Image: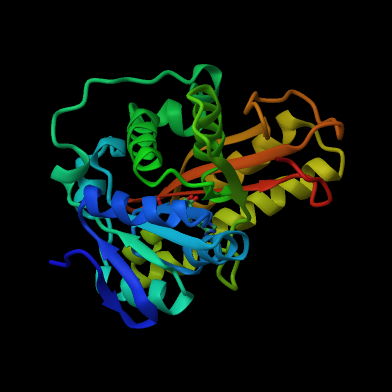
Length: 298
Ligand code: AMP
């Protein structure tokens, strides 16, 4: 498809090849230009674009990657049906002022079967890690490959995938990546639904139900802030989903935002996150909110 230096409007460069990407970024680094990086799986929406915007604010050039990473999918149907909207993505990125798009093929990122495995201790034994076997191993594989290629000064991730952010931040520190890992707020639709590429897979009637996930999180937040216990709040949310019938709750967790330890009681000396995963038909959606709006977390 595109080769070295293919230009779209707004002079966005597109690379499919690692050597050409690295050569270009090396020359940028030699000119003391800082690199902000936003890794994605495409089907871009305003949530992704908010990360590009933040990266632009803080860096001289912004690199975005689009790669639907097979090793992080534990469900073959989910991988096969993952939305792909590449021409639209390129337009959006160029409009947003992204400087470089890295668009590798599978054989570029995985020239050989990979045997390296990671372990993230307690951070992965809950929520997404507990329900999607091997997911974070796949995430860490691809993100570490991309960090090696791009060597960004800063990399931007969404709070939407809170556990992913925490795990990437941890292994980046453990492995001495010279990259600051930054978490950005969740961008939502007007009705509260967290933007997600997977929302494109919802039928029109499922799309009207999907905001109930955010409604449940708000309900849980109000319950805890009104002094109800963790146990009581969990029951309320369980009943909310049971009554709804159409949304199949996979988990609802109330955890410390930094360690993801489940909490037994609310204490405002630490930030707390409320996290949900639920199936709507075939589509698995996740969302989370912080309990306290006023507190910085990371
Ligand atoms: P994905 O393409 O789903 O792998 O997401 C790429 C990055 O965008 C990840 O860091 C996500 O956490 C982030 N992201 C996805 N949805 C949103 C959203 N609604 N708001 C902010 N960031 C998001």
